[in-house]
Image 1 (cartoon, rainbow, N blue to C red):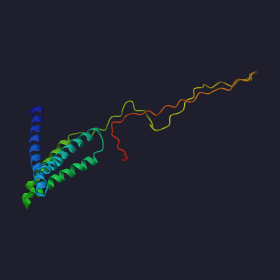
Image 2 (image 1 turned 135 degrees about the horizontal axis):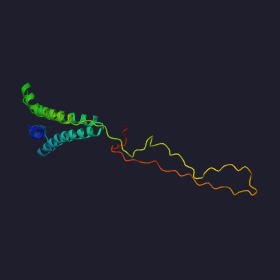
Image 3 (image 1 turned 90 degrees about the horizontal axis):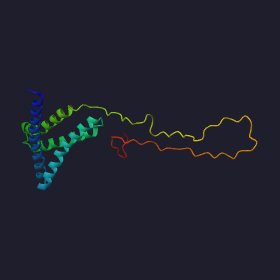
Image 4 (image 1 turned 120 degrees about the vertical axis):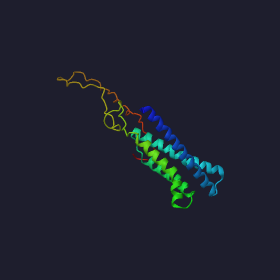
Amino acid sequence: MSERTETAVRLVILLAIGTMAGAAAFTHVHDLSVTHGQPDWIGWANAVAVELMAIYLGLELRARRRTGRPVGLVGSLLVAFALLSLAAQVAEAEPSVWGWTVAAVPSLAFLALVKVVLSNAPAVPPAPEPDQPPGDWYEAPEQATTEPERPADPVPPAVPAPAAISAPAVVLPPRVVQSNRPHVVGIIR
């Protein structure tokens, strides 16, 4: 079997399991919401929110790992939404060990797929920007003088020279280089 064929077969299996696990989880979240007093449309909204959030967080986790950004919060949210989906499936099951086990299979399959897919993304640290200046960006720039130094006159001039007017020193603002990382106000990194 060629590598291309194997990749295609793996993709088909991934999509089949993901679709079936998603459909089962989606239905369980909807049914649980409706059983506990939510209108039908809110049941569907809850199912969409829980299941798509888990998928989105998996993709975001992969993107962050690829760029070397922190993944702690995203990983925690992914586990929380997967557990919420798992809890909905188990709550809808027959109250027995086998009922709970069988009901948990879609969420466990989804978690296993996410783990396998995400483990294939290498964690690569971001490359330094080539135009990034060395040193601290926040240091004050050194002030340059525009007046060259004159050698001392060995003989004082006969006529006093007018007072020299010095030009103000040129101060350039610090160079700002846009970063690839988003900055959030109020969070210290």
